[in-house]
Length: 341
Ligand code: UT7
Image 1 (cartoon, rainbow, N blue to C red):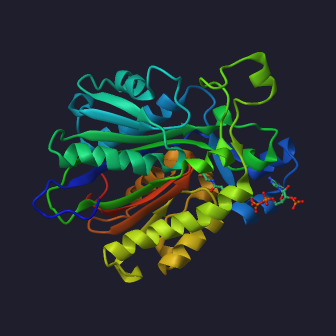
Image 2: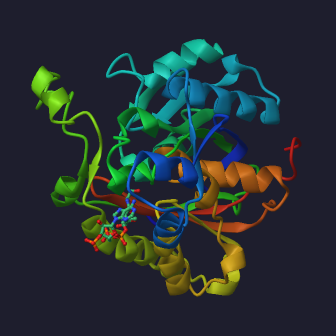
């Protein structure tokens, strides 16, 4: 899809919200659980701590995030028309987490569905939600990125347990009041041949749960970190550069890179390729680790709530994740100042 003419309906993010659980799992805690060190984790990933949801499921993370969205926008749950939930840790296979959230929040008039694109889930879901607005079919679409990664993390595997955390974050998309503001462009990719490097094999129709799948730890995520790193570091930078080039943007035109938070070294490589100063990159991996579908909206919500993200700011959202899936979105921020759209 290329940038649209001004005559079409433009979709914009009109409210943001997030939720992180209270319990903190620090690098010092992990030092007691596996053979690792705070220094190794910080230098190799940039992570200091992550959050763990002790009670409840992904729908609770998503519901709390969406509650904040509704409060910020000042609307009732019944006004939401569609709910899209990006997650790799749905409460269960079915019903969808979107349906569970619809019920928990009381969005009685909404329909919805889950979308599986791992760490690119939020960008994929944002693009899907945008289509519903651009066609004129709907006026209020909620897009949620939420993952309880602790539910599928093996806390005896030092290769993965240091990376992930739990969080939910959400946005509301509506028709824009100004065609120059909103979700302006996107590029999305997938390469299924990368599936063997990052996956959770057990519990699906290929390997339904058995004693053996449990014994073989097939209900935990597996990652060949080095292989994923090599393609992620190139893929995320490529796609960020591509969206800048096709919209004739220089580094000066971009106010923020909003990257998926998998590894600070991947984020830095992406920033360097875009020619951006570090002050123009949203980074919270140090406090939350990799929260999969939640990372990007969690950044947006935090930066907006502390007043650093302003209407008119130009953002490049960028991600790389399991699938492989990757992509970028160009967004001109629509929301004025906290608690007042
Ligand atoms: O979000 C979805 C997409 N995912 C990503 O983008 C993640 C991409 N991958 C990465 O971010 C990095 O590959 C990791 C952070 C996962 C790993 O970093 P790395 O620099 O690629 O380390 P490595 O796997 O090559 O391991 C280097 C060494 C190994 O030891 P030897 O073989 O050199 O003796 C590992 O055994 O570090 C060792 N190691 C650790 N040491 C201390 C691996 N994990 C740990 C650990 N603590 N937690």
